Image (cartoon, rainbow, N blue to C red; front, side):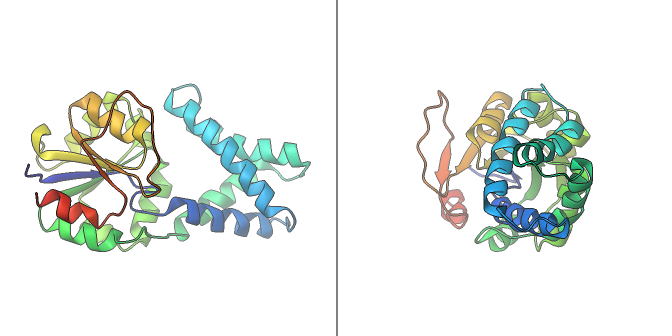
Amino acid sequence: MAYDLFLFDLDDTLLDFKESERRCFAAVLQSLGVRDRLDELYHQYQIENRRLWALFEEAKTSKEHLKVERFRRIFENFGIEIDPHKASDHYLEALPETVVLMDHAEEICKWLAERGEIGIITNGMHAVQMKRIENSKLAPYISFTSVSEECGYAKPDIRFFEHSAKMAKKFHKESAVVIGDRMETDILGAQNFGLRSCWFNPEKTKHNFSFKADYEISHLSEIQSLLKR
């Protein structure tokens, strides 16, 4: 199958968001005077953040609420008297400056950009995601970025994929492929919209979803051999 449109998820697919997030979280809390229990705080932040993003993807909360609520919850749980709005603002200012690439991300984007068009499809916050791409080495290879905050719908909603398709220079379902690390957003969304998909599964985890991706890889470098078939 020949593809000419490569729709990449951003976080934990092309950019190592977990590592960026960990570094940024620690730096921001330290700048606000928190020195102790940073690992515990970060662990709890991850839990609350995942819960809130799951609610957002189900359209049960807003992104504005999510931004602040994740900090309010951990500060309340740990008895920390810091304004969660202030922490959120500092975090969102610092996060775009803390960019870590996934292994082989730059080389695979360069290779694919010579063969077609690369689009980013992300449920992140528009200003943050655009700045992170700008600060990465990937910007020259990316044709467009579709962000849920701008679109009004989040993956796996089919309306998000309709919005993304309109941003491509040319779009044909049979020659487009979605590449992402999350089955429940990237792969399900691709399937719902009638696109082929590639699950990026670096930890080789098992899943029990009723649907599956057309392809599965554990290293981004595998895309080259996969798409040459």
